[in-house]
Amino acid sequence: MSGGSIPRLVIAAPSSGAGKTTVATGLMAAFAEAGLVVSPHKVGPDYIDPGYHSLATGRPGRNLDAYLCGPDRIAPLFLHGAAGADLALVEGVMGLFDGASGMGELSSTAHVAKLLRAPVVLVVDASSQSRSVAALVHGFASWDPEVRLAGVILNKVGSDRHEELLREAMDSSGVPVLGALRRDGRAGTPSRHLGLVPVAERRSDAVESVAELAARVREGCDLEALLALARTVPELPDAPWDPAAELGPVRGGGVGPRRLAPQADPRRPTGQTLAPAEGAAAPEKPLIAVAGGAAFTFSYAEHAELLAAAGAEVAPFDPLRDEHLPPGTQGVVIGGGFPEMYAPDLSANAPLRAAVAALAASGAPVSAECAGLLYLSRSLDGKPMCGVLPAEARMTERLTLGYREAVALRDNALAAAGTRVRGHEFHRTVLEPGAGADPAWGLTHPERRVEGFVAGGVHASYLHVHWAAEPSLAGRLVASAARSTPARGAAR
Image (cartoon, rainbow, N blue to C red; front, side, top):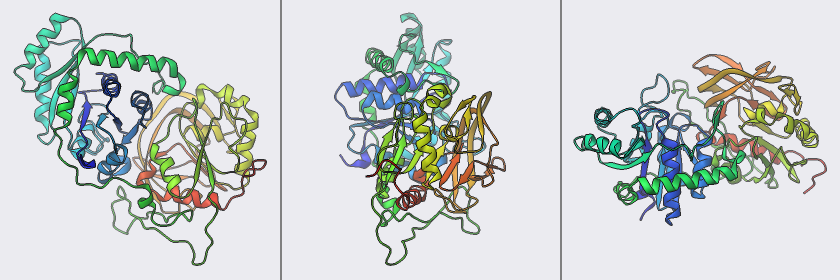
């Protein structure tokens, strides 16, 4: 079997709350337990569901976001992530046809399914309907003829009689029922202010939940029919995404920014690779420390791959547990997560806060997104943080959520001036002030404002950016780290 013909299914739903994550995670675990190598994927920018997918399959959960990365990268990123798999399962986002606001189908589950030429299995919440389920499915099946709605899994079925009525109704729809799952709260996953509680915060309980989901799916779904359906896919003509090829031949020297041509569409940045000055010596392989642990769980798998491809040694550290940065650290990446849930513990780890502050003061590159931005502030909900940024952070009731378009206003350790990116904001915190004297980004859509901080080697922002869409970010960060001095007291 060639890489382009990897068996695949997209698990979608008419709306949020129908049970996509429950069914998709259960299917992943059930097929993995049956001995298949399962590649897990998630439509959209969500970081939390891929953690459960990874737990179910033993492979990195990967995102497929046509807004952040562009439609032309979806199939290559999919093929990269699914390499060597027997089956790929893609969990959708929101309702099947819900995409980026005001941009039609862009980044919807239906859009990604078409880009992957993958059949869609619709998870329907049947708890308050019987015969009407057929009308609902008929509407979804006929809305876009390019979307192949090939099966239905009935979720939250109340009884044997209820299932019988639902199946009778579906007999005339032309869409086969591939499973029926009873209402059952035993395998629930707890939620809070930004969605599900991440796996890293409840690992033992999460393992039990995923095992229970697998058992429910084995009992209620026709796994053989689902696998047979997944094997009906056509060949994808695309080549797998390759981080080394994306960065070009230069290692450690970084790549140039992707700038707009005078009349280019700002939503589709293009770029070029710049070689280092002639005769420049190749720098020593720099070590970049990447924050992880329960407080910092949000990261795209491709980020570490790009850093490594750009010539870095990548080392994890946990700001909740580690009192020192990894030996020889020359740069730090602190992604998203839930530092607000761990503010007292993060604050109590004074040695690491001091180490991060010292590294930032040295001019070494520090890239921080959302949770990382809060960690670098003076305080979070009154608890002292690293004090790198002249700002105070606190929790609020207001949810800030949505896609953004932005431009780098000045050269910095992460992006050259003029670099345009698409990103995503998702938080219930506020930073005062919200931007420094040198902001990280100028937002251009859907609103115009400045945001974040650039100071020395620090680039800190609420904006989550997928580096696969802009590999120059990883290349520039590694090049900057190669020029910095290893963290004091941690000689390599």
